[in-house]
Length: 294
Image 1: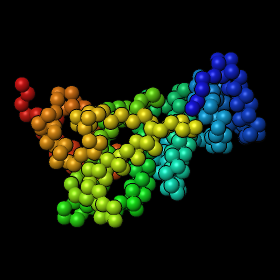
Image 2 (image 1 turned 45 degrees about the vertical axis):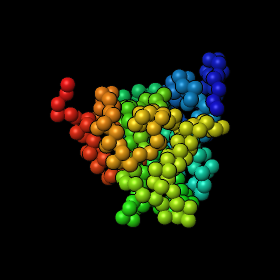
Image 3 (image 1 turned 180 degrees about the vertical axis):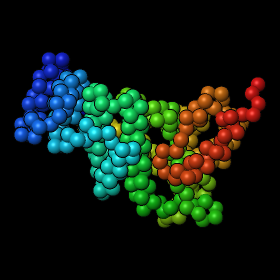
Image 4 (image 1 turned 60 degrees about the horizontal axis):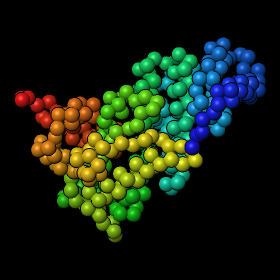
């Protein structure tokens, strides 16, 4: 875990890292736009996270353009997913997630402190990073999960996939640097997996969801990716971790409260089967936007 640095140590590290940046780039340093050199002083002095990230990862020095240039939407997600596909197992996935999160957070925070990014860019970049981490982790975990338990199928033998709904700030693409991520897990139909050790779909996707939470939320020597909050799901902490679409619809029609209507306004599919996720939200529209209100 990262520990706090005294202010004088923070300033000393900022100065040291500035000098190292100039040494690593050599003549290139003097040819860089002045705003990059000036921004390094501000970014390193104002953010303990940036200081510690630069201590651990000097690679950002050799790619100053990634700091200065506006990144096209989706580009950070592609980088994250590409890195995660190389992970051979869960421990490697956990390490890769944290390394990619640190590098992307460094870029986003640097641009924010330098004044190069608008508030909208910063919030959208943070939200896109969370989407990519969730989706990339789920893709790998789903593959390993199916190798152990088979594919989840409905009563007609059709494959089923987990749907991850982003709620709150994540759903609205308003994530900030200290936000946790509010999620709901769902799957289209009941049934069971087709492996040698079959599980019914609720158990199958609950276990998969638990693995996803762990790789995102677990604190390691490299920190964590995002804190995960599942309390917005039906029945809160007392409810099942994953529910079928039919069970979700029944819950909201029979037990849904006013605040849950408001929460679902921001909901959007962020990982898994996005097409079925859109269909689920369309099914829930009569609950969210009631025709009559008492």
